[in-house]
Amino acid sequence: MDERVYLKSHGPDSQWLVGSNMREALSVPLQQQTTPLSEFLSALFQALDREGLRPCILRNYEGFPSINIGNDVDLFIRSSELPRAMRASSSIEGIRIVGYAERQYVANIFLEGVCSATGTRMQHVDFNLSLTWKGLPYLTTDAVLEAAIPRSAGNLTFLVPCPVHEAVISLFASLLVGGGLKEKYFPEVQRTFAGSRIEAVAALRPQFGFKNATRLVDSVIGGDRVRILGCIRSLRVSLSLRSLLHRPVRSILAVVRHYTNELAVRFSPGNVETVCILGLDGGGKTTLIETLIPLLHSAAVVVEKDHPRIQSSFVRASSEMTPGAEFKAQTPRSSLVSMANVLAWLLDEWLNQFFGKRNLTLRITENCWCDLLAAPGRYRYGGPKWFARFVGKLFPSPDLWIMLDPLADNLQTTNPDVHPAKIRRQLDVYRAFVKTRRRYVILDASQPADRVTESAYAAIIDTLAQRADKTLKNRFQQRKDTN
Image (tube, rainbow, N blue to C red; front, side, top):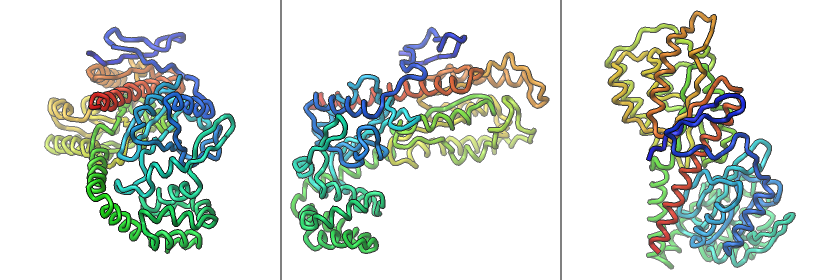
């Protein structure tokens, strides 16, 4: 079924002119209302309660319900409860899931339509499924959930870990897992260990032994950061040996699953979502990207402007150029050199899909191989066009193409460097090219900048939401079928 989308601003009273071949229009309205954090949290807890879930909020809840002092909301549930948690999250009115990533120990969801701070529209929620290092638990799920205590904030009532468990979780998230010490949580961890030393040692003893547990707790109480960091190796070794001794088969399988999952996450191109913005040099592409990235914060684990190394070496700075202006005339490279550079660019693009990421990543780029056809002088490309077209078919295709059309057919300029005929040819190439893509939008770049930004944002959100919905259906329908 055809998934192409052709959308273009049309007149002052119409947001979209919809092409006849599109399957469905964007469902996100321009400048939509966002839900305050307090209302979102209330709706989330109510939805989870309807599913019979009472998750434990691990940390950063002190400002609830109106302020989130962390970047995300960390909820702790049993792994078997994840399908119900996702069903609850997707049922909240006015909220869209725009991203989903899952590891063995955590499921990340990215929600659009939540205002947790001025100017924000996204909220990142983590459903933590276990407290582990390399698949080996340092605190058991049952121990944390059974010892959880209720806490009230405004009209909200939720569970939080007991103080000792919360201190251990806050400390080990950076120390055991990351190999460092996060100062943000250290003062509270130190106070908790000092006030509940015996309880802290008892909580750590089953997985690390009395000697290692006592050494770590006393080092934290004394504030000796060098000694604390010196405990990392012995803690990891003790956790590994004790896990293998008491649960050999289960521990080996857990470690294997951990590394298998990590490889899949880090080297799967499916965890990269790409948006490519086409348009004339100096026509607002760079400004649009710089405006979009803050709005899309928390739409994925990483939201970034893409700067592939090979591509960047070909492209000269163009953000200050007049729309449609050509670079100063330079001698094109030889055909062989040009073709070799295109192949190097192709290799770099694929390497960028598989490497250089640790989790779900949203990349926005303003350049693509189509520029070799539309503006070959920009790359000093001297190779044949048929070769650029052929290699272009081998490039990884972005999930969404956005073209900024300045209606250059009617462009009037006194700048001698701008040649309307060349502008029209360049735009014709972009128009013809983008309409062959699977999913694209064409926006009227002559509209006010904020309107263009909102239109591009809506297109991106709709694309991400549809892709996330497909991922969730495949993931949880598959589990249902296997059960």
